[in-house]
Image 1 (spheres, helix red, strand yellow):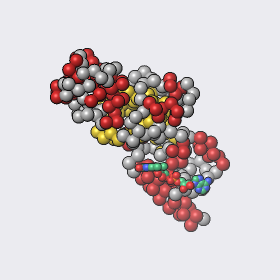
Image 2 (cartoon, helix red, strand yellow; image 1 turned 90 degrees about the vertical axis):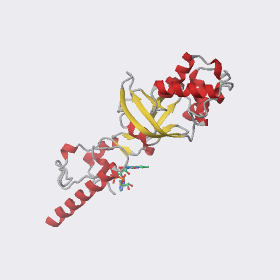
Image 3 (cartoon, helix red, strand yellow; image 1 turned 30 degrees about the vertical axis):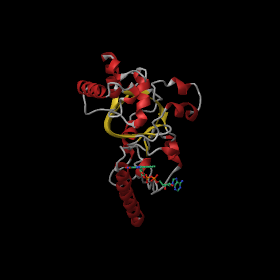
Image 4 (spheres, protein in one colour; image 1 turned 135 degrees about the horizontal axis):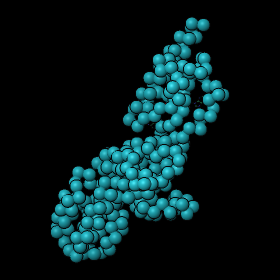
Length: 258
Ligand SMILES: Cc1cc2nc3c(=O)[nH]c(=O)nc-3n(C[C@H](O)[C@H](O)[C@H](O)COP(=O)(O)OP(=O)(O)OC[C@H]3O[C@@H](n4cnc5c(N)ncnc54)[C@H](O)[C@@H]3O)c2cc1C
């Protein structure tokens, strides 16, 4: 599908529009400084993440801006990759990241079905069940294997601590970690991996019935070139098909009318 029936030089600047819904490059220890130091993502991040390939279903993602305000929250599925985070809720979150290079943090609720109190009781039950185990071997009922070393490290509880000596405060820190697992966002993936574009020709300059430009006669728009974008899930395809049909038919009618 072509973006527009005709492209005119006048519209070349809109190709500068940014691409928003992309996966996120991230570090998992809340320390974006590592990436700012200039080392390549591959060298710096991969050794820190042992969760590559891990898919999490039924988690809640909260995207927070630099002031700590939640700008997006969604329940669903995400994926840890070699570069950071991906998956449906991550793509949607990236649409809320703006254009100004603002810093964002992802806060994951790994147990959204349990509030703090219920989760604490659940952890306590597991700790009683595995009372003589080391901490690192007592989380298998609560988290996937790949996540356990990361949870152990971030909890601050030494991995070989016997579960029966873990204090209430330490347990509460663990609860906090399950409910607010921190991921620093260092940026989105490059444009060539983007899924949906943001920005483009202003909708106010397009006749919504024919998709004809209100400014340039004989010019029609469809799809991504228009300043509309939506979450993935078919909405962008629907936009492309619906506007493509309208623009194509109107352009053909205009040609026949000549
Ligand atoms: C990996 C991926 C997954 C996606 N998943 C979803 C999804 O699940 N749900 C959803 O709603 N959307 C999804 N999208 C977005 C959706 O595919 C796009 O919004 C939609 O295809 C846009 O249609 P379009 O016709 O505007 O542009 P495009 O489909 O990008 O078509 C533009 C066409 O123009 C051609 N072209 C570009 N420049 C020139 C030129 N100078 N001369 C001639 N031809 C040119 C290109 O080669 C291309 O074929 C996804 C996109 C990607 C990349």
